Image (tube, rainbow, N blue to C red):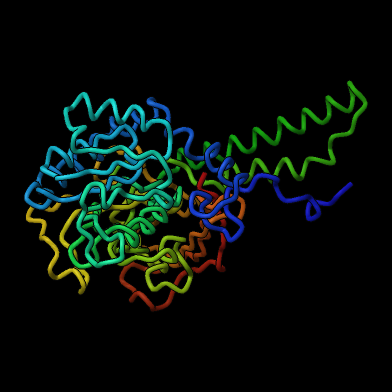
Length: 425
C-alpha cells in the first residue's frame, strides 16, 4: 500500500501549469476544472440573487455610480463579471456613452435580457468570455485610445470582484489584467478604487466550542464504525483512522468559518494587514499576504477591565473605497466628489461576505487588572491544488501583564510561539 507521501497528486488541479488562474493561461483540463469548481455557480440566478439581496453591497455600488454621474457621463465603461448586469445598467443610467459588460458564464444571456428590459441595450454590449481573452470593438465602435497602437480605450472599470477575506476566488487577477490592457493610464478610474484587509481578536466562544464538539463527535462516530465493521463484517478499517482524524480536524478545527459577528465581539481595535490601490496593485500583490510585508504583523492589547472574554480567535474582513485616485500618475483623472464606502466588518451590519473566523485551539481568559497581548503575523497564500483558494498561516504568542505595567515591561506569563494553518473553504 502506498504511504500518504506517495499518494498521487489530484488529476484535476484548478490552476494553470505555472500556478495562475486557469482563465488566463490554463489548458483545457484546467479550464474545465475551473468552470466546475468556480464559474458554474455564478451562472445560477439563485446565486446572483444572494448577492443582489445584499443591501450593504448594493447601496455602496449604487452610491458610487449614481452618486458620481458627472464622472460617468459620456465615458466608456467596462463591467468585469457583470453577472445579471445590474452594475452595467447603473453605469448606463449614470450617463455612460458605452458600457461593455463582460461575463464568462451563460448568465450573460440573462444580462442581455436585463439590458433590454431596462432600455439600455443601445448603450450596453454584453460580451461573453474570459476578460483576459476578449477584445473590444475599438474600430467598429470608434473608441478613442489613449496611446496609438494600444487598446487603452476604457475610462472606468467597474467590478465586484471581492471574495471572502477579500482575495478568495482570485478574481482580482482578471481585473488587473483587464486594467493593464484596457484602462486609460492617466485618466482611468477603478470602482472600487482601494481595498483594505483587517483582523482583530474576537470573543466567539460558543461557536468555537461547537466546532470542537463536532470534531470530537466525528472521531467517536468513526471509532464506533471501525469496531462495528470489524466485528460484524470481519474487515479492519482502523488503518484509516489517522487519515480520517486528520481530515476531520482540517474541516472542523483548521478551516475558517463564515461568521456574522456583532460589534461587541471585537476585543480590540482592528489592525490593517494589507492595503491595495486598485490602480497600481500588481498580480503579485493579488497573490496573498506575505510574511515580509510590513502590515502582515499584528499586535493587540486586550484589557480585561474593559471587554469580556475569553479570546476565541482572530477574525478577518475587508473594506473597499470608491474615491478619487491617489497615485501620482492620476493627478489629471476625474475627481469623485461623492465617495462611497463598503465595509464587511462586524461594525457595519450583514453582508454576504461576512467575516472569516480563525479559531484558536484553546481560548485565552481575560482577567481583571490584567492586559492580554496577542502578537503575531498572518500569511495568506494560494493553495497548489486550486489557485482560487487560500490557506492562512497565523503565527502568534499570548502574554499577560498587569494593566499598569508598560507594554514591553515584565509579564506574568507568555506562551511559546504557536502556528496554525487554516484553509479558507
